[in-house]
Length: 518
Image 1: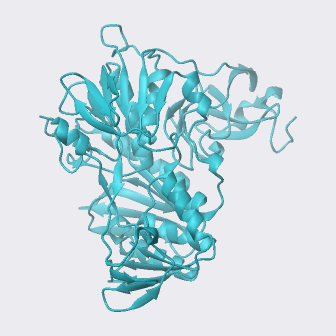
Image 2 (image 1 turned 45 degrees about the vertical axis):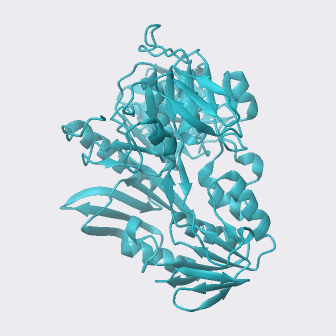
Image 3 (image 1 turned 90 degrees about the vertical axis):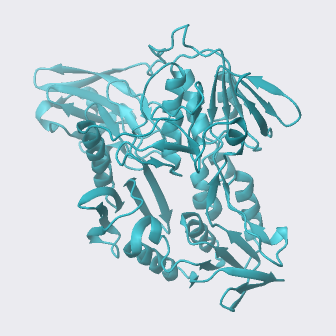
Protein backbone atom coordinates (compact mmCIF):
# COMPACT_ATOMS: atom_id res chain seq x y z
CA UNK A 1 0.00 0.00 0.00
CA UNK A 2 1.20 3.55 -0.69
CA UNK A 3 2.23 5.81 2.15
CA UNK A 4 0.35 9.09 2.87
CA UNK A 5 2.94 10.86 0.70
CA UNK A 6 2.34 8.43 -2.18
CA UNK A 7 -1.32 7.39 -1.98
CA UNK A 8 -2.61 4.12 -3.33
CA UNK A 9 -5.12 5.30 -5.89
CA UNK A 10 -7.23 2.18 -5.39
CA UNK A 11 -8.34 3.59 -2.04
CA UNK A 12 -9.65 6.74 -3.67
CA UNK A 13 -8.42 10.31 -3.94
CA UNK A 14 -10.52 13.44 -3.31
CA UNK A 15 -11.41 15.16 -6.58
CA UNK A 16 -10.11 18.44 -5.21
CA UNK A 17 -6.80 16.77 -4.45
CA UNK A 18 -5.93 16.69 -8.16
CA UNK A 19 -5.47 20.11 -9.78
CA UNK A 20 -7.36 20.65 -13.01
CA UNK A 21 -4.88 20.26 -15.85
CA UNK A 22 -2.35 18.76 -13.47
CA UNK A 23 -1.33 15.44 -11.97
CA UNK A 24 -0.32 13.84 -8.70
CA UNK A 25 2.01 10.89 -8.05
CA UNK A 26 0.94 7.72 -6.28
CA UNK A 27 0.72 3.96 -6.62
CA UNK A 28 -1.63 1.30 -7.86
CA UNK A 29 -0.65 -1.55 -5.62
CA UNK A 30 3.10 -1.87 -6.04
CA UNK A 31 3.26 0.04 -9.32
CA UNK A 32 4.21 3.70 -9.53
CA UNK A 33 1.46 5.70 -11.16
CA UNK A 34 0.23 9.20 -11.78
CA UNK A 35 -3.34 10.51 -11.74
CA UNK A 36 -4.14 13.21 -14.29
CA UNK A 37 -7.15 15.50 -14.32
CA UNK A 38 -8.77 17.37 -17.20
CA UNK A 39 -11.96 18.98 -15.93
CA UNK A 40 -14.14 16.15 -14.59
CA UNK A 41 -12.19 13.53 -16.53
CA UNK A 42 -9.37 11.57 -14.89
CA UNK A 43 -6.65 9.28 -16.23
CA UNK A 44 -4.34 6.88 -14.42
CA UNK A 45 -1.13 5.78 -16.14
CA UNK A 46 2.31 4.47 -15.25
CA UNK A 47 4.79 6.95 -13.86
CA UNK A 48 7.89 5.83 -15.76
CA UNK A 49 8.73 6.38 -19.42
CA UNK A 50 9.46 3.17 -21.30
CA UNK A 51 12.43 4.72 -23.08
CA UNK A 52 14.88 5.59 -20.29
CA UNK A 53 12.55 5.48 -17.28
CA UNK A 54 12.07 9.22 -17.10
CA UNK A 55 9.73 10.42 -14.37
CA UNK A 56 6.52 11.25 -16.23
CA UNK A 57 5.24 13.01 -13.13
CA UNK A 58 7.75 15.75 -13.95
CA UNK A 59 6.57 15.90 -17.55
CA UNK A 60 3.82 17.83 -19.29
CA UNK A 61 0.16 17.14 -19.98
CA UNK A 62 -0.81 18.47 -23.42
CA UNK A 63 -4.40 17.69 -24.32
CA UNK A 64 -4.75 13.93 -23.99
CA UNK A 65 -1.00 13.36 -24.20
CA UNK A 66 1.65 12.97 -21.54
CA UNK A 67 5.19 13.95 -22.50
CA UNK A 68 8.41 12.74 -20.90
CA UNK A 69 10.87 15.37 -19.62
CA UNK A 70 13.96 13.32 -20.52
CA UNK A 71 13.76 12.88 -24.29
CA UNK A 72 10.24 14.08 -25.17
CA UNK A 73 8.58 10.71 -25.69
CA UNK A 74 4.81 11.07 -25.90
CA UNK A 75 2.07 8.79 -24.52
CA UNK A 76 -1.72 8.60 -24.77
CA UNK A 77 -3.50 9.24 -21.48
CA UNK A 78 -6.44 7.12 -22.66
CA UNK A 79 -4.56 3.99 -23.70
CA UNK A 80 -0.97 4.37 -22.52
CA UNK A 81 0.22 3.89 -26.12
CA UNK A 82 3.60 5.37 -27.06
CA UNK A 83 2.49 7.89 -29.65
CA UNK A 84 5.89 9.17 -30.73
CA UNK A 85 9.50 8.10 -30.46
CA UNK A 86 11.88 7.72 -28.77
CA UNK A 87 9.60 5.44 -26.70
CA UNK A 88 8.08 2.48 -28.54
CA UNK A 89 6.41 0.55 -25.70
CA UNK A 90 3.22 1.64 -23.98
CA UNK A 91 2.96 2.55 -20.30
CA UNK A 92 0.47 0.90 -17.91
CA UNK A 93 -3.05 2.32 -17.97
CA UNK A 94 -5.91 1.77 -15.51
CA UNK A 95 -9.65 2.33 -15.58
CA UNK A 96 -10.70 5.29 -13.46
CA UNK A 97 -14.07 5.67 -11.75
CA UNK A 98 -15.52 8.88 -10.34
CA UNK A 99 -17.78 8.23 -7.36
CA UNK A 100 -19.15 11.28 -5.62
CA UNK A 101 -16.22 13.53 -4.81
CA UNK A 102 -13.61 10.81 -4.92
CA UNK A 103 -11.65 9.24 -7.76
CA UNK A 104 -10.90 5.50 -7.67
CA UNK A 105 -8.44 3.65 -9.86
CA UNK A 106 -9.74 0.21 -10.78
CA UNK A 107 -8.42 -2.66 -12.90
CA UNK A 108 -5.49 -2.40 -15.23
CA UNK A 109 -6.49 -2.13 -18.87
CA UNK A 110 -4.99 -4.42 -21.48
CA UNK A 111 -2.07 -2.99 -23.42
CA UNK A 112 -3.06 -0.77 -26.31
CA UNK A 113 -3.88 -3.21 -29.09
CA UNK A 114 -2.31 -2.77 -32.48
CA UNK A 115 -5.07 -1.39 -34.65
CA UNK A 116 -4.98 -1.65 -38.43
CA UNK A 117 -4.71 1.75 -40.01
CA UNK A 118 -7.80 2.90 -41.85
CA UNK A 119 -5.63 3.46 -44.92
CA UNK A 120 -4.25 -0.07 -44.76
CA UNK A 121 -6.90 -1.44 -47.10
CA UNK A 122 -6.18 -4.34 -49.41
CA UNK A 123 -5.91 -2.13 -52.49
CA UNK A 124 -3.33 0.19 -50.90
CA UNK A 125 -1.40 -2.24 -48.73
CA UNK A 126 2.07 -2.84 -50.23
CA UNK A 127 2.86 -6.43 -51.13
CA UNK A 128 6.06 -6.16 -49.09
CA UNK A 129 8.23 -3.53 -47.43
CA UNK A 130 12.00 -3.33 -47.63
CA UNK A 131 13.92 -0.99 -45.32
CA UNK A 132 17.51 -0.18 -46.25
CA UNK A 133 19.25 0.71 -43.01
CA UNK A 134 18.76 -0.46 -39.44
CA UNK A 135 19.24 2.70 -37.42
CA UNK A 136 16.62 4.62 -35.50
CA UNK A 137 14.53 5.49 -38.56
CA UNK A 138 14.57 1.94 -39.91
CA UNK A 139 13.56 0.26 -36.67
CA UNK A 140 10.90 2.87 -35.92
CA UNK A 141 9.37 2.24 -39.33
CA UNK A 142 9.36 -1.53 -38.95
CA UNK A 143 7.85 -1.32 -35.48
CA UNK A 144 5.13 1.08 -36.65
CA UNK A 145 4.23 -1.08 -39.64
CA UNK A 146 3.46 -3.96 -37.32
CA UNK A 147 1.73 -1.76 -34.77
CA UNK A 148 -0.53 -0.44 -37.52
CA UNK A 149 -1.59 -3.97 -38.41
CA UNK A 150 0.46 -4.50 -41.55
CA UNK A 151 0.94 -8.25 -41.93
CA UNK A 152 2.99 -8.44 -45.12
CA UNK A 153 6.72 -9.21 -45.35
CA UNK A 154 9.04 -6.65 -43.74
CA UNK A 155 12.77 -6.86 -44.48
CA UNK A 156 15.48 -4.70 -42.92
CA UNK A 157 18.91 -4.75 -44.58
CA UNK A 158 22.04 -3.30 -43.00
CA UNK A 159 25.75 -3.54 -43.64
CA UNK A 160 26.41 -3.43 -39.90
CA UNK A 161 27.19 -6.44 -37.72
CA UNK A 162 24.74 -5.42 -35.00
CA UNK A 163 20.95 -5.24 -34.75
CA UNK A 164 19.55 -1.71 -34.24
CA UNK A 165 21.18 -0.06 -31.21
CA UNK A 166 21.07 3.19 -29.26
CA UNK A 167 23.45 5.26 -31.37
CA UNK A 168 23.40 8.43 -29.18
CA UNK A 169 24.73 6.37 -26.28
CA UNK A 170 27.90 5.37 -28.13
CA UNK A 171 29.69 8.62 -27.35
CA UNK A 172 28.12 9.01 -23.93
CA UNK A 173 27.62 6.29 -21.30
CA UNK A 174 28.96 3.43 -23.42
CA UNK A 175 32.28 5.11 -24.22
CA UNK A 176 32.55 6.35 -20.63
CA UNK A 177 32.26 2.76 -19.41
CA UNK A 178 28.91 3.31 -17.69
CA UNK A 179 26.74 1.24 -20.05
CA UNK A 180 27.47 -2.42 -20.79
CA UNK A 181 27.02 -3.94 -24.24
CA UNK A 182 23.64 -5.45 -23.39
CA UNK A 183 22.15 -2.01 -22.71
CA UNK A 184 22.71 -0.92 -26.29
CA UNK A 185 20.23 -2.91 -28.46
CA UNK A 186 16.95 -1.10 -29.07
CA UNK A 187 15.16 -4.46 -29.15
CA UNK A 188 16.08 -7.95 -28.02
CA UNK A 189 16.84 -10.50 -30.74
CA UNK A 190 13.55 -12.34 -30.16
CA UNK A 191 11.62 -9.21 -31.06
CA UNK A 192 12.45 -9.53 -34.76
CA UNK A 193 11.41 -13.16 -34.89
CA UNK A 194 8.21 -12.62 -32.93
CA UNK A 195 7.21 -9.72 -35.16
CA UNK A 196 8.24 -11.43 -38.40
CA UNK A 197 10.81 -8.76 -39.27
CA UNK A 198 13.52 -10.28 -41.45
CA UNK A 199 16.66 -8.52 -40.18
CA UNK A 200 19.56 -9.08 -42.56
CA UNK A 201 22.94 -8.06 -41.12
CA UNK A 202 26.34 -7.67 -42.80
CA UNK A 203 24.70 -7.09 -46.20
CA UNK A 204 25.36 -3.93 -48.18
CA UNK A 205 22.76 -2.88 -50.75
CA UNK A 206 24.58 -2.23 -54.02
CA UNK A 207 21.79 -1.21 -56.37
CA UNK A 208 18.19 -0.08 -56.52
CA UNK A 209 16.05 -0.84 -59.55
CA UNK A 210 13.08 1.50 -59.38
CA UNK A 211 11.28 0.05 -62.39
CA UNK A 212 11.53 -3.55 -61.18
CA UNK A 213 11.05 -2.53 -57.53
CA UNK A 214 14.06 -4.53 -56.45
CA UNK A 215 17.20 -4.00 -54.39
CA UNK A 216 20.36 -6.07 -54.73
CA UNK A 217 22.97 -6.72 -52.09
CA UNK A 218 26.60 -7.74 -52.25
CA UNK A 219 26.81 -11.40 -53.19
CA UNK A 220 23.93 -11.19 -55.65
CA UNK A 221 20.83 -11.65 -53.49
CA UNK A 222 17.85 -9.54 -54.52
CA UNK A 223 14.73 -8.41 -52.63
CA UNK A 224 11.54 -7.23 -54.28
CA UNK A 225 9.43 -4.56 -52.60
CA UNK A 226 6.01 -3.02 -52.79
CA UNK A 227 7.20 -0.05 -50.75
CA UNK A 228 10.76 0.96 -49.88
CA UNK A 229 12.26 3.07 -47.12
CA UNK A 230 15.75 4.45 -47.59
CA UNK A 231 17.15 4.99 -44.10
CA UNK A 232 20.80 4.84 -45.08
CA UNK A 233 21.88 7.52 -42.61
CA UNK A 234 25.19 9.33 -42.88
CA UNK A 235 28.84 8.38 -42.99
CA UNK A 236 31.65 10.11 -41.10
CA UNK A 237 33.78 12.52 -43.06
CA UNK A 238 37.11 10.77 -43.58
CA UNK A 239 40.29 12.82 -43.43
CA UNK A 240 43.60 12.06 -45.01
CA UNK A 241 46.23 12.64 -42.34
CA UNK A 242 49.77 12.45 -43.72
CA UNK A 243 51.96 10.06 -41.77
CA UNK A 244 49.09 8.35 -39.98
CA UNK A 245 48.49 4.60 -40.01
CA UNK A 246 44.99 3.14 -39.91
CA UNK A 247 45.66 1.83 -36.40
CA UNK A 248 46.13 5.41 -35.16
CA UNK A 249 42.91 6.87 -36.59
CA UNK A 250 39.50 6.34 -35.00
CA UNK A 251 35.99 7.46 -35.93
CA UNK A 252 32.84 7.03 -33.88
CA UNK A 253 29.72 6.29 -35.87
CA UNK A 254 28.94 2.61 -35.39
CA UNK A 255 28.80 0.18 -32.48
CA UNK A 256 31.91 -1.47 -33.92
CA UNK A 257 33.68 1.92 -33.91
CA UNK A 258 32.75 2.43 -30.27
CA UNK A 259 33.99 -1.00 -29.23
CA UNK A 260 37.30 -0.41 -30.98
CA UNK A 261 37.72 2.97 -29.31
CA UNK A 262 36.89 1.53 -25.89
CA UNK A 263 39.41 -1.28 -26.35
CA UNK A 264 42.15 1.12 -27.39
CA UNK A 265 41.40 3.79 -24.78
CA UNK A 266 41.90 1.27 -21.97
CA UNK A 267 45.66 1.53 -22.51
CA UNK A 268 45.80 5.09 -23.85
CA UNK A 269 47.27 7.88 -21.75
CA UNK A 270 46.76 10.80 -24.13
CA UNK A 271 44.30 11.26 -26.99
CA UNK A 272 43.92 14.01 -29.57
CA UNK A 273 40.40 14.70 -30.89
CA UNK A 274 40.07 16.54 -34.19
CA UNK A 275 36.79 18.44 -34.10
CA UNK A 276 34.85 20.37 -31.48
CA UNK A 277 31.41 19.22 -32.61
CA UNK A 278 28.90 17.43 -30.39
CA UNK A 279 30.49 14.08 -31.17
CA UNK A 280 33.98 15.43 -30.51
CA UNK A 281 33.07 16.98 -27.18
CA UNK A 282 31.03 13.99 -26.03
CA UNK A 283 33.99 11.74 -26.81
CA UNK A 284 36.23 14.14 -24.89
CA UNK A 285 33.96 14.03 -21.83
CA UNK A 286 33.68 10.24 -21.93
CA UNK A 287 37.44 9.74 -22.25
CA UNK A 288 38.02 12.08 -19.32
CA UNK A 289 35.71 9.79 -17.34
CA UNK A 290 38.31 7.12 -18.13
CA UNK A 291 41.11 9.41 -16.89
CA UNK A 292 42.61 9.77 -20.36
CA UNK A 293 44.33 13.09 -21.07
CA UNK A 294 42.43 14.80 -23.89
CA UNK A 295 43.43 17.51 -26.35
CA UNK A 296 40.77 18.94 -28.69
CA UNK A 297 41.98 20.46 -31.97
CA UNK A 298 39.52 22.43 -34.10
CA UNK A 299 39.52 25.35 -36.56
CA UNK A 300 36.62 26.98 -34.70
CA UNK A 301 37.15 29.98 -32.46
CA UNK A 302 34.45 28.73 -30.06
CA UNK A 303 33.25 25.12 -29.68
CA UNK A 304 29.68 24.51 -30.89
CA UNK A 305 29.33 28.13 -32.00
CA UNK A 306 27.44 27.26 -35.18
CA UNK A 307 25.01 25.00 -33.33
CA UNK A 308 24.44 26.81 -30.02
CA UNK A 309 26.08 30.23 -30.33
CA UNK A 310 29.03 31.95 -28.68
CA UNK A 311 27.63 32.10 -25.16
CA UNK A 312 26.81 28.41 -24.84
CA UNK A 313 29.98 27.48 -26.72
CA UNK A 314 32.16 29.41 -24.29
CA UNK A 315 30.32 27.81 -21.38
CA UNK A 316 30.93 24.35 -22.82
CA UNK A 317 34.63 25.13 -23.30
CA UNK A 318 34.88 26.21 -19.67
CA UNK A 319 33.07 23.07 -18.54
CA UNK A 320 35.55 20.89 -20.40
CA UNK A 321 38.56 22.85 -19.21
CA UNK A 322 37.34 22.48 -15.62
CA UNK A 323 37.57 18.72 -16.21
CA UNK A 324 41.06 18.88 -17.66
CA UNK A 325 40.47 19.04 -21.43
CA UNK A 326 43.02 21.17 -23.31
CA UNK A 327 41.79 23.08 -26.37
CA UNK A 328 43.81 24.06 -29.43
CA UNK A 329 41.35 26.23 -31.36
CA UNK A 330 42.04 27.89 -34.67
CA UNK A 331 44.16 24.85 -35.52
CA UNK A 332 43.92 21.68 -37.58
CA UNK A 333 45.90 18.44 -37.61
CA UNK A 334 48.60 18.78 -40.28
CA UNK A 335 50.29 15.38 -40.02
CA UNK A 336 51.48 12.60 -37.73
CA UNK A 337 55.03 11.57 -37.03
CA UNK A 338 54.90 8.39 -35.00
CA UNK A 339 53.17 9.38 -31.73
CA UNK A 340 53.59 13.07 -32.54
CA UNK A 341 50.60 15.05 -33.81
CA UNK A 342 51.81 18.15 -35.62
CA UNK A 343 49.27 20.97 -35.77
CA UNK A 344 48.84 23.53 -38.54
CA UNK A 345 50.43 26.21 -36.37
CA UNK A 346 53.51 24.10 -35.75
CA UNK A 347 52.76 22.89 -32.22
CA UNK A 348 53.37 19.21 -31.45
CA UNK A 349 51.26 16.95 -29.23
CA UNK A 350 51.88 13.41 -28.06
CA UNK A 351 49.00 11.03 -28.73
CA UNK A 352 48.34 7.33 -28.45
CA UNK A 353 45.52 7.73 -30.95
CA UNK A 354 43.68 10.36 -32.95
CA UNK A 355 39.88 10.54 -32.93
CA UNK A 356 38.36 12.29 -35.94
CA UNK A 357 34.98 13.92 -35.36
CA UNK A 358 34.66 16.47 -38.13
CA UNK A 359 31.12 15.77 -39.26
CA UNK A 360 29.17 13.37 -41.46
CA UNK A 361 27.82 13.27 -45.01
CA UNK A 362 24.44 11.77 -45.97
CA UNK A 363 24.72 8.37 -47.62
CA UNK A 364 23.01 9.16 -50.94
CA UNK A 365 25.01 7.15 -53.49
CA UNK A 366 22.34 4.43 -53.78
CA UNK A 367 19.61 7.00 -54.40
CA UNK A 368 21.71 9.00 -56.89
CA UNK A 369 22.59 5.94 -58.95
CA UNK A 370 18.91 4.95 -59.05
CA UNK A 371 17.95 8.37 -60.40
CA UNK A 372 16.12 9.70 -57.34
CA UNK A 373 16.24 13.44 -56.78
CA UNK A 374 19.00 14.45 -54.38
CA UNK A 375 20.29 17.74 -53.04
CA UNK A 376 22.76 17.29 -50.16
CA UNK A 377 20.45 14.48 -49.12
CA UNK A 378 17.53 12.55 -50.60
CA UNK A 379 14.82 15.06 -51.45
CA UNK A 380 11.37 14.14 -50.10
CA UNK A 381 8.01 15.88 -49.90
CA UNK A 382 6.08 16.63 -46.71
CA UNK A 383 4.96 12.99 -46.61
CA UNK A 384 8.63 11.83 -46.76
CA UNK A 385 8.10 10.34 -50.22
CA UNK A 386 10.93 10.67 -52.75
CA UNK A 387 10.67 11.63 -56.40
CA UNK A 388 9.55 8.05 -57.09
CA UNK A 389 6.14 6.95 -55.80
CA UNK A 390 6.27 4.26 -53.14
CA UNK A 391 9.87 5.01 -52.18
CA UNK A 392 10.38 6.97 -48.97
CA UNK A 393 13.40 8.32 -47.11
CA UNK A 394 13.85 9.09 -43.42
CA UNK A 395 16.54 10.01 -40.96
CA UNK A 396 19.91 11.67 -41.52
CA UNK A 397 19.69 11.11 -45.26
CA UNK A 398 16.35 12.86 -45.86
CA UNK A 399 15.98 16.51 -46.89
CA UNK A 400 12.38 17.56 -46.31
CA UNK A 401 10.31 20.76 -46.43
CA UNK A 402 10.33 22.40 -43.02
CA UNK A 403 6.77 23.66 -42.42
CA UNK A 404 7.97 26.54 -40.24
CA UNK A 405 10.60 28.13 -42.48
CA UNK A 406 9.40 26.84 -45.83
CA UNK A 407 12.97 25.73 -46.61
CA UNK A 408 14.22 22.22 -47.16
CA UNK A 409 16.28 20.98 -44.26
CA UNK A 410 18.24 17.90 -43.29
CA UNK A 411 18.69 17.42 -39.56
CA UNK A 412 20.94 14.83 -37.95
CA UNK A 413 18.94 14.24 -34.76
CA UNK A 414 18.13 10.77 -33.42
CA UNK A 415 14.56 11.57 -32.32
CA UNK A 416 13.84 13.27 -35.65
CA UNK A 417 15.01 10.13 -37.46
CA UNK A 418 12.81 7.84 -35.37
CA UNK A 419 9.75 10.04 -35.77
CA UNK A 420 10.31 10.25 -39.51
CA UNK A 421 10.47 6.47 -39.66
CA UNK A 422 7.10 6.29 -37.91
CA UNK A 423 5.46 8.81 -40.24
CA UNK A 424 6.94 7.14 -43.34
CA UNK A 425 5.57 3.78 -42.19
CA UNK A 426 2.04 5.13 -41.83
CA UNK A 427 2.28 6.77 -45.25
CA UNK A 428 3.49 3.53 -46.81
CA UNK A 429 0.15 2.12 -45.75
CA UNK A 430 -1.70 4.77 -47.69
CA UNK A 431 -1.74 7.58 -45.16
CA UNK A 432 -1.23 11.22 -46.04
CA UNK A 433 0.44 12.41 -42.86
CA UNK A 434 2.74 15.40 -43.09
CA UNK A 435 5.97 15.23 -41.13
CA UNK A 436 5.61 18.21 -38.81
CA UNK A 437 7.38 17.07 -35.66
CA UNK A 438 9.37 19.80 -33.92
CA UNK A 439 13.09 18.87 -33.93
CA UNK A 440 14.55 17.83 -30.57
CA UNK A 441 18.03 16.77 -29.52
CA UNK A 442 20.10 16.53 -26.38
CA UNK A 443 23.71 16.26 -25.32
CA UNK A 444 25.04 15.25 -21.94
CA UNK A 445 28.59 16.02 -20.81
CA UNK A 446 29.92 15.68 -17.25
CA UNK A 447 26.37 15.31 -16.01
CA UNK A 448 25.21 18.57 -17.63
CA UNK A 449 22.37 17.93 -20.08
CA UNK A 450 21.49 20.47 -22.75
CA UNK A 451 18.18 19.93 -24.53
CA UNK A 452 17.23 21.79 -27.68
CA UNK A 453 13.81 22.19 -29.29
CA UNK A 454 13.25 23.76 -32.69
CA UNK A 455 15.72 24.44 -35.47
CA UNK A 456 17.70 27.62 -36.09
CA UNK A 457 20.29 27.61 -38.85
CA UNK A 458 20.90 31.31 -38.22
CA UNK A 459 19.77 33.88 -35.68
CA UNK A 460 20.37 37.53 -34.83
CA UNK A 461 19.61 37.46 -31.11
CA UNK A 462 20.41 35.11 -28.24
CA UNK A 463 18.54 35.66 -24.98
CA UNK A 464 19.53 33.85 -21.78
CA UNK A 465 17.05 33.55 -18.93
CA UNK A 466 18.85 32.25 -15.86
CA UNK A 467 22.51 31.30 -15.60
CA UNK A 468 24.73 29.02 -17.64
CA UNK A 469 27.25 28.95 -14.80
CA UNK A 470 24.74 27.56 -12.30
CA UNK A 471 23.42 25.09 -14.90
CA UNK A 472 19.90 26.54 -14.76
CA UNK A 473 18.78 28.48 -17.81
CA UNK A 474 16.75 28.84 -20.98
CA UNK A 475 18.58 30.06 -24.08
CA UNK A 476 16.36 31.42 -26.87
CA UNK A 477 17.56 31.82 -30.46
CA UNK A 478 15.64 34.50 -32.36
CA UNK A 479 15.55 35.86 -35.88
CA UNK A 480 13.74 39.15 -36.52
CA UNK A 481 12.07 38.84 -33.12
CA UNK A 482 10.77 35.30 -33.71
CA UNK A 483 11.99 32.47 -31.47
CA UNK A 484 13.18 29.61 -33.66
CA UNK A 485 14.67 27.31 -31.05
CA UNK A 486 15.27 27.02 -27.34
CA UNK A 487 18.05 25.25 -25.45
CA UNK A 488 17.59 24.50 -21.77
CA UNK A 489 19.68 23.28 -18.85
CA UNK A 490 17.80 21.91 -15.82
CA UNK A 491 14.53 23.28 -17.23
CA UNK A 492 12.94 20.22 -18.76
CA UNK A 493 9.39 21.48 -18.31
CA UNK A 494 10.19 24.66 -20.22
CA UNK A 495 11.64 22.55 -23.03
CA UNK A 496 8.39 20.59 -23.28
CA UNK A 497 6.31 23.74 -23.11
CA UNK A 498 8.20 25.33 -25.98
CA UNK A 499 7.69 22.18 -28.06
CA UNK A 500 3.92 22.47 -27.53
CA UNK A 501 4.01 26.21 -28.27
CA UNK A 502 5.71 25.56 -31.60
CA UNK A 503 3.22 22.83 -32.47
CA UNK A 504 0.33 25.13 -31.62
CA UNK A 505 1.82 27.93 -33.69
CA UNK A 506 2.27 25.57 -36.63
CA UNK A 507 -1.37 24.48 -36.48
CA UNK A 508 -2.54 28.08 -36.30
CA UNK A 509 -0.73 29.32 -39.39
CA UNK A 510 -0.88 28.45 -43.06
CA UNK A 511 2.07 26.41 -44.23
CA UNK A 512 4.72 28.10 -46.35
CA UNK A 513 4.84 27.02 -49.97
CA UNK A 514 7.51 24.46 -50.81
CA UNK A 515 8.58 23.05 -54.12
CA UNK A 516 7.30 19.63 -55.12
CA UNK A 517 9.65 16.70 -55.53
CA UNK A 518 10.15 16.35 -59.25
